[in-house]
Image 1: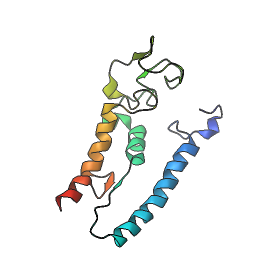
Image 2 (image 1 turned 90 degrees about the horizontal axis):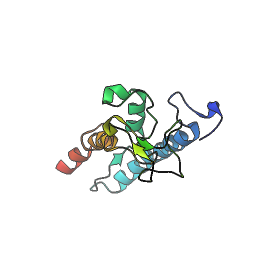
Image 3 (image 1 turned 180 degrees about the vertical axis):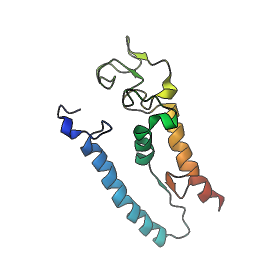
Length: 139
């Protein structure tokens, strides 16, 4: 976390952290293209982890997530993000939210089953994998 509000985007995410993910994907796509040309018989799939999370954060209600406190962990100890590295989920006094399926983050580090399900469907059927995994293994 940063005390400087300018370090965050309109979703509440740190610019620097998201910048790393964007830069990584920008370099990864052409590298995968090169591998596909070099090994045309191999099934090389780009599974994007960044875009599904950003889409949910931009419009949580559309995907069945709670709209208030979208960045808060379901299982935590309070504060802006309901997360504290010294008192984590499963420790005495740390409680989970009543509806984990409405949360994106389980414990401030891991995503909830609902979020992983959304990401996985996007990888299996598209649009978050190129090509979608099920389409790639059918051929």
